[in-house]
Image (tube, rainbow, N blue to C red; front, top):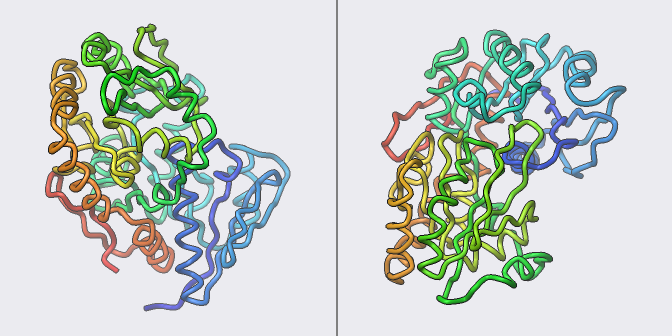
Length: 381
């Protein structure tokens, strides 16, 4: 292997609310920290003045200012780290810099613009087009996203490196430390062993929570409640959901509370129209929670044969799958076993190793697996 070049990591994500994109960055840098320690190397995280210190032994935090947000990223970051390679893990990067690797998680702002705020639609598309032209390499989280990005941005799918999400973080969650999980379930009717299904996601339109409202009466007839966990994000155009007697909107819940809910749910329902990856799927599988997922976008690639799949516009199909799970303990046990096996394909350590190789040589060729073959394409290490 070539010697490790000096590189830095864009730490703007440390100042942002933790959604799936920021969770990806946090877990990648934690795994990179361990790998760099084994290599005897270091890589600083350059961040705005307000960034909290993640206290990583081989990835020291370098706070630099002034400014914050997009202005910090576009003005301060390239000035502070202008001459050396930069890793950006959260969709954006300084437009003026060429020697950098940028992870663009999806092209949903192009494919489903109605899900995003006007400000987000004004900034992200032109910036991402420029980054796709200038960056040394574009990475993403699934083969589906690579094809989607290539459809809208000036980069070919074959030149995009796929470095997926991992699952290990969900194993560290401790339901014994849950704070609001018990109160969330306090009003759930326990007419069956597992009296609720869990949905996790924002109220963005592409998350398709309307499907659950359409199916709510059928779930009620089965004695099941629907708990929707997760809040909105400023980038999304929020969808107003009508109420239903057996649907409970829990809002944002912390990780230990997610573990509490996943460990007690009949299943996770994931009805999105489009996702770059679908991290809650592997989190649920890692914790032994069966998954009923949309059959669109990246979800078949992530789920393989370890979930029940249904069209996002067919409530009856979702009711059929959930009724089957409620009535068959054997089916549920089978999905739990397949899910735990499936998530072994998604490792933060392997993704971090891929990024370290990219920072050595951004033009390293990738192995790009086709859709539906059940594999996740990663760098040839």
